[in-house]
Image 1 (tube, helix red, strand yellow):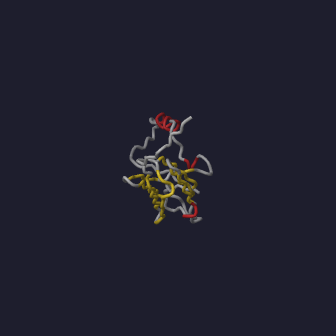
Image 2: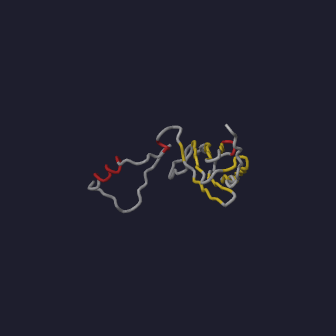
Image 3: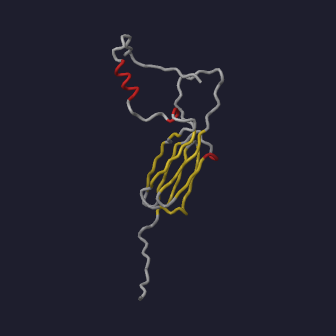
Length: 150
């Protein structure tokens, strides 16, 4: 796979006066693109969480991921969505001009804004959008506690 470096703009510096700045940018601490960190890299899909008085809804944008490659786990305070997007086959004699789509494993743990009922959950996956609906626990329940004599 061949990558081509493309530079836009008219700030070409044939004299090398900005070489020091370029070296600083190279060694500046910053997150490394996970694509280059290991063969089994992770990517982060975009997600939305919103709520009503009765439920919490999560939408995850994970196009290109097969339904069988998704896992969904829920407890009363968090949701874990994980899976894998497999790389699409490429034309053997083609040259990349732009490569932005991320492949590999992903995992997101989303902490919920209020406790939920893990028994009242529904999910659907259509057109690359995973939608999860979780009922909130009713916290205004009162439990009568018997008092015993010692």
